[in-house]
Amino acid sequence: MRMHLLVEHVLRTAEEQGLWLPHDTIIVAVSGGPDSVALLHIMHEISQHHVPLKLICAHVHHGFRVESDEEALMVERMAAKLDIPFVMEAVDVPAYMIESGKGTQEAARDKRYEFLIKTAVKYDARSIATAHHADDQAETVLLHLLRGSGPSGLTGMKFNRTIKNVELIRPLLRIYKTALVDVCESESLVYAIDESNLQSKYRRNEIRLDILPFLGQYNGQITQALNQLSSVMTAEDDYVEQAAAKMYHELVHKADERFTFSVSSFSGLHVALQRRLIKLILNYMSADSELADYNKIETLRDAITQKAPSTWSRDLGGGFICIQEYDVVTFQPKSFVQRVRYTYQVNAVVPELKVSEIGKILRMVVYSREQKSWSRAELHGHEAVFDADQLSLPLTLRCRQDGDTMKVMGLNGSKKVKDILMDDKIPPSIRAQIPMIVDGNNQMVWIPGIRRSIHAPVNQHTTSILHMSLEDA
Image 1: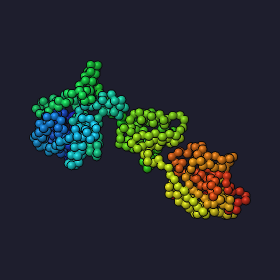
Image 2: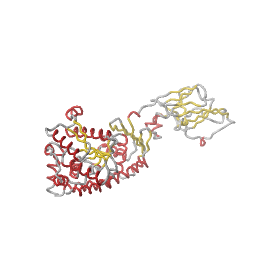
Image 3: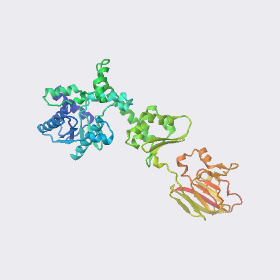
Image 4: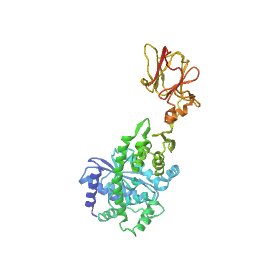
C-alpha cells in the first residue's frame, strides 16, 4: 500500500475518533520495527502537509538484545532525517523484574510507558501515539476471549484512552501489518526485526504464531473476523455503558465514600445492567481492576437479588466491603464500619444536649398541663412526652448496649432492644447511631424514632409534661 493511502486512512480515523487537534504535541513511540517506523513517517507526512503537529520521536532502549544499540542509533538517524526531536532512555528491565516480581513482557511494558508518560509531561504533550495495528487488535481480542473476558474485554484496544492525564492514541488500529510492511518496502524505509517476536514462549507470540494460524484453517479471515467482533462489541459495550451510567445517576446515592442503592430498584434491572452497575461502583471506589472481576460481580449480584430480604457483608478486598441491610445495599471502605460509643448524663432538664458522635441534638422542654398537651397522634416519631414528676433523674442518653431491654408501651413484659430494631428492619450499620434514653432507675424510657416505654406516661393526673425531641444538629 502506498504512503498517501495510509495517510488518508489515518486522517479519517483521527477525525472520526478525535485523536488530535492542530498544533498538538505528540510523542511518537518508535521501537524501530516496521509498524512504528511506518507510524513515524505517516505522522510526519500528516504534520507537514495536512495538520500542523509537533512530533517527538521517543525510543526505549531495553538492552535485552545485542542489536539494541544499533536499533537505537537507527531510530535516532531516522528522526534526524525527518527533523523530528529524538529522546531515548535506557531502562533496566531485569532489575525492575526482581523488584516487582513481574514477567519480562509486563515489566518491559511498565518501564516503556513510564518513560513515555514522563516524556509527554516534559514536552507538555497532549498524547502518546503507539503503532498498535489491526493484527495486534485481533490478538488482543482472542487473548481476552481465552481469559473468559466479558463484552468490555472483547472490544479490544481503544483508539484513545487516558493514562495518568496523558492520552494514549492508536492511529493505526484499523490497518493490518502487511500494509505497514508494504509501505516500508515501497518507500525504502529502514526497519529492524525483533527476533524475540518469533519465539512462542510469550503468550501473545504464541497466539500470533500458533493459535491464529490454527484457527485460520477454519476461517481464512480469522484476523478480520476478530476485528469485526471488536468493532461490534465496542459499539454495543458503549451503549450498555451509557445505560449503566444513566442507571447509576438514577439509583445510586453517593455520600462520604459510600455508594448505596435499594434492592427493589436494582432487582428490576436487566441482568446486564445489574452487572454493569456493580462494576461501575467498584471502578468508582478503586482503580484496582481486581476488585471488578466477573466472579466477584456475579457473587454480589446473586446475593443482592435473592428473594428473601436479609443482611450480610462481603469483603471486596482492597479495604472495601459490600453490605446489604434489608432493602439497602452499601459499598464502602472497611474503615467506616466502626461502632460509635457515647454516653451523656443530665441531672436536670436542659434546653438542648448536643450529641456530636451522631450529629443530633436532644431538646427538652417542660410544660404545665394547662400550657400545652399532646395526643399520641400529634407526636412525630422523634418526639415523646412524659410525666415530668414521675420520670426518675438523672437521664442518660447513650448508645445501645448488649442485653438492653425495654418495657414497650402497648406490650406485656419486656422486649430486647435488639429484637425491636430487627422487627423494625433498622439496618445494623445505623443501629449504633440510634440513641437510647435511660432514666435514673436504669430503665429504658425512649428509643427516639422507634419506641416509647410504659414509664412515666402522661395521664389525667399529670400536671407537668416533659417534651423531648431528637433533631439533626
